[in-house]
Amino acid sequence: MTATGNKAIFSLADKRVFVAGHKGMVGSAIVRRLRATGAEILTVDRRQVDLTRQAPVEEWFAANKPDAVFVAAAEVGGIHANSSRPADFLYDNLAIETATIHAAKQVGVKKLQFLGSTCIYPRLAPQPMKEETLLTGPLEPTNEWYAIAKIAGLKMCQAYRRQYGCDFTSVMPTNLYGPGDNFDPAESHVPAAMVLKTHNAKLSGAPSIEIWGTGTPRREFLYVDDLADACVYLMERYSGEEIVNIGTGSDITIRELAETVARVVGFRGSFTYNTSKPDGAPRKLVDVGRLTSLGWTATTGLEEGFRRTYDWFLKNVASKAA
Image 1 (cartoon, rainbow, N blue to C red):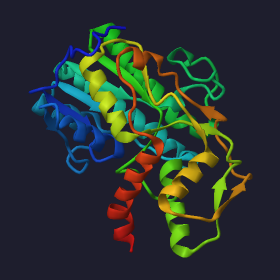
Image 2: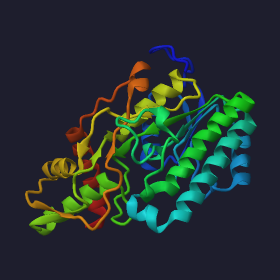
Image 3: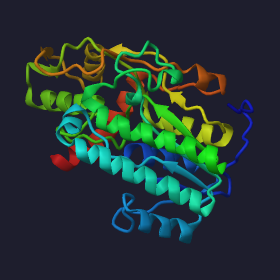
Image 4: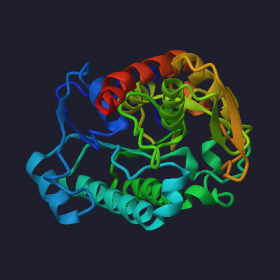
């Protein structure tokens, strides 16, 4: 692992920086953060270039010649989406990774950062999860298709680094929430689903909200703009083969998450727990020792992050549905 404290070893100022997946929650947050760096931000709409298709991606890279690339494009979703569309989650993510990473190598991109996910770690990995626990045990069955694809992406970065000397790195974000999240009730992750469900319960005057599972699993949640800040920080200051976890280093139960969202939304009812639904992994907390040693820590508290998220939801989702 190579790092130089707080000093940038690869300044993004005046660099041509491509953000793959710029319209998603993560990609749009990276774009917001990049505006302060002086970089020239490159994006492309999926109607112009399908990132799952190798030839169009290579043509776009050859024409635009980015200096740096953030691979934030991905097919993502919660437990229901993963279990009902396993082929999509496996194929689409593998295709996006292979197309963008190989094209970056072909045109000589100076730095690339691949965004994985902490769901790549074994289901029963020791907590908090260190980067070294990767591939030491079985995956969580409810998201294994997505996890396998993400593992392939980070291994591809390592392989291209070893064989071709490419400065390609990988980061592993924990569970995310924030502006730009997917609030589709059938496709969303836990934080967005909780905001939507709680908001609707408040509007309808429902006395209670049903929570999937027992409410006891513990999860870590990172505000997406904190993630973007960490990604830019590491792009400029980290160059190594080892993956780097990005998280807060603390977790809460799903019950506590529901209570936090209820306070933010203003819902005063109760919660019921549908124990016929899966809990997923019992706990997911990442070890952020490597990240903090590089000089970065998260700054947005959970309640403040959800207040910002709910404000965005009211302006961009709820207002359009009304």
